[in-house]
Amino acid sequence: MSRSLSPLLAVVFLLLGPGGSRAFDPAQPPKIRVNGLGMKLVLIAPGEFMMGSPAEEDGRSDDEPRHQVRIGKPFYLGQHEVTVGQFRRFVADAGYKTTLEREGRPGFGYVVAEGVMDMSKDFNWRNTGWEQSDDHPVVNVSWDDAASFCRWLSAKEGTAYRLPTEAEWEYACRAGTTTRYFTGEAEETLQGSANMSDAAFLAKYAGATWSLAWNDGFPFTAPVGSFRPNAFGLHDMAGNAWEWCADWYAKDYGSQSPVDDPPGPATGEVHVVRGGSFTNRLKYVRSADRDSSRPKYRYNFTGFRVARPAAE
Image 1 (cartoon, rainbow, N blue to C red):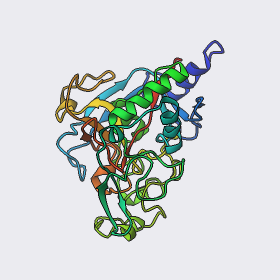
Image 2 (tube, helix red, strand yellow):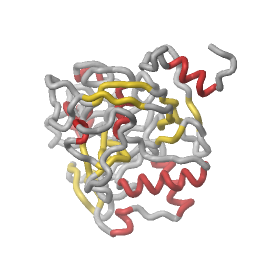
Image 3 (spheres, one colour):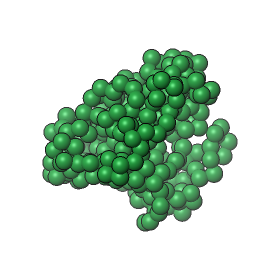
Image 4 (spheres, one colour):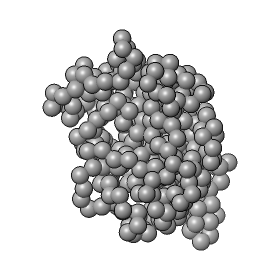
């Protein structure tokens, strides 16, 4: 390696093959940057991958056509989902009121007495119906709330924080893999790597008849970093909380998107969410699964993680 390379370019050089294709070495520890809020961000090197799923993949939907994508620039991505504590600092510093609070509408939460998920004006990002410490992922936040957090953090840090694009998100989730999950083809490979609907959730929510047999000890959200990371060093890319992406959603976007750094459709009515949550199993925690929600909608299983440029 040339001694004239900057530290950032040196890391990128190590993570790329001579032709620029992905050559990630899992033994190479991720390069992590910690910002002023204490958030850990992982350097994601550029590379190419096949986005979407093969036709034979179990659980696939028809909005996942397989297509080549090239991520052209390195970027940093939150090692964890944004936490309750981090969101609390934003709210206090900016005097921010969430979509849910401004509109005075009910949020989603767990009704302990009835053992069900339901809507109530008592539920919001501060109260989900189950105990959340400051280390849990913040949920009951809309896309608008997530974008507002990014604008606030950008002003605080002096660099452009944002939500990841859908292509960046899947590239980072897969971490060089081509299988159904970033852990392998079988659901069982996710045990210990994803907070999903399991025996712990079923014990609290009897209606979750789709739950898996194993018990991970967390019926609802888990503190970020409680499960094993993927090969890029990112935690909770499957399960725990759905994550907002920057893109508008279009069912057919994958069949017409550009190869280089696809930005998503120019307009739309709903935004992409990715990754599944503690309520899900099967198709929804696959690396290729796509879902969507309106920008002002908020659920007790949806949060987000942040991205930022690597050059600043």
